[in-house]
Length: 311
Image (cartoon, rainbow, N blue to C red; front, side, top):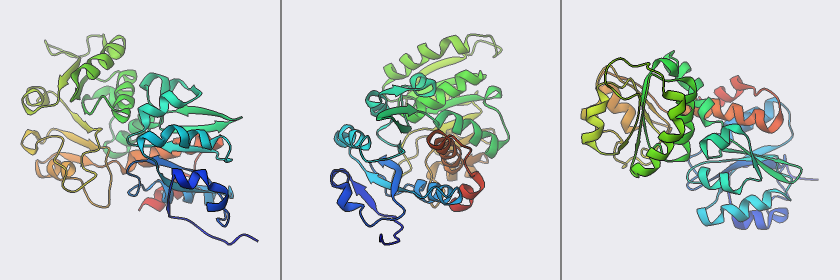
């Protein structure tokens, strides 16, 4: 008889390669999880395990520390290990898109995957980040993206791309894409341009723009921005610099930091000190996680149980 054992451990590619031995005494069995590097900070296990228990699925969710060069073999192992699916987080979202056997429209648009479902031996990629972000903005600020002028910092990454697409599909008033590699932001802007071609903004201001990530270029645009989004990993470590210098923030801004943690990120604190409203990524984690659960199990997630687990 299996020992009743809940897990909060982190597993590795080596563990997956020896999974029958590693997971032999774990009950209920691990059938879903998250691949990331780093992954120790992830709150997805406590949220998803609350959902799995509430729905009496007889399985649990765990963290897997998978490095970039390990992603492909780790995903291939999922096919034969009876996993239902997996989340992928930083830095794997764009790479996972290239590794999936099939992708749905949400993933294909963004060129990034954060949710994989294993179906008949195939890896089916989805992206719940964009829709999760939309719901989080409504929850935190009681606003809709279509009414906002948005600046996304880190628009070249998997999370930033998904958010940018969601803003475009919603027809945001203005969208400024900020990235260290401007060429990547420009390429994304060209994809989004057909959705943001209408004259929604009065005056000479460009409705869609890609700019370099530096203080001078950001300063010029921030006067006509409502929502600032940090889609970079900056803030995961307390020593990280703020993605937006505090002196550029003003009371009219609302700030959403996709990074979450036990305390406010430096960006959220800076927003509040400037008299602006700010929120971290916990609400987005909840919303995209509930959408991932629905992808895996084809049923509505018990979102209140998941929310309670994060409090």
